Length: 497
Image (cartoon, rainbow, N blue to C red; front, side, top):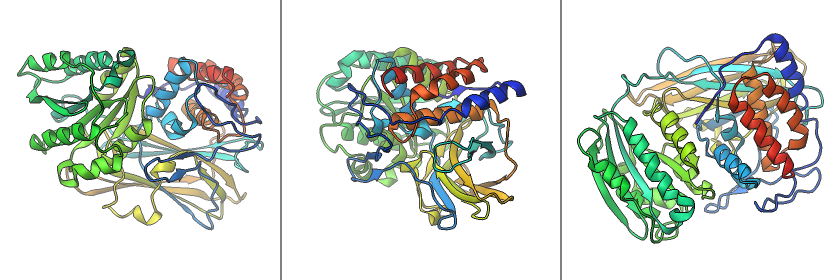
């Protein structure tokens, strides 16, 4: 769910916030050993090598600074996942640091709503802000942070298309832990209660085998939906492949081009029967049956396979979220899912082109596993990201400059309109006029990114160094979401991060 940050604060307060922010990275020492969360201990001055995809063997190391004279273009698929922040929050509230390889800075940043103005039509509005950082900012020689914000138009519920939702629910034995299956039952009842009578729901369960518990049924037509949800019980092994195959088959059989067709997988992600790798699962399902059907993956429980569910979502044209309690489930289903049903932009991607005359180097913070080749930006056959109505996407770059005046970068966004199939584009330019008093939300984005970099071991500062300045920033905000961020930073500092 996005945490709303819709307030602005006076110039004096902004100045104080910026002063606080300048201490974010004036720190030394790497992240400490986490103990219970098995985080790798780093030597002083070292940077964690990142995380490895257990299927492909590919390692996603934190992005390094790039010379625009060598490579001026930074290209990546849009991503609106937030599961990494939610899982880190749960881990920290349970007294443990999250594993470094499950921390994604872009998911921390995109867990907050920055109140970008919405465009009038479909597609994206592009919003840029350049923030001056102090000389001692420890990200190479970076002196600036460039925030790239994208925003889609909110669609009123009265205007949204009806939906066909196929729930694929893990009822294996592991879902008994912490009453995960009970939380799933309650959250689904709540969600169905908020759907329109003309919306439709199907339910597939899987454990050792899969079972179609409910064929596609309109919400207004039957009490059997609630009965099917009440019958959910955990047992057996975990054959996710079989569940997804049956789920996609039902979604394809009831496919309606006038509706939003979506498969929603709820699981702790522990597949141990049948195919257990995301690429193999989706390849087995096949492109034809999955065409036009988006996949939302919902991680459930205090521990879950984030990598598997994230990659399933990314490759299934959807996104990943997470909850571990009834309250978190309500936020995900009530505040996020029902308000963003539908897809506004398909295969959305960003290309930022830096000018070597004004920029000495740039570093994209996060998005490592969403990178695209530069020549794929204009290739509309390349799978990228899907974004729903009312969604925002934020990316941050650390930049060092040459001292020359002029344009720092141009930003281009490209997507496919799901209704017309036509390509949409939007562009904006970031000039050398720097925002000395940045918006409150820009500061929050930087704090969130800095926190993630500490937790994943790619920062030269610690949470203890960050905490006082984050507290001062939060004091300028009336929003509890920022207070919660500070609380998490404090917990992480006490745990040695």
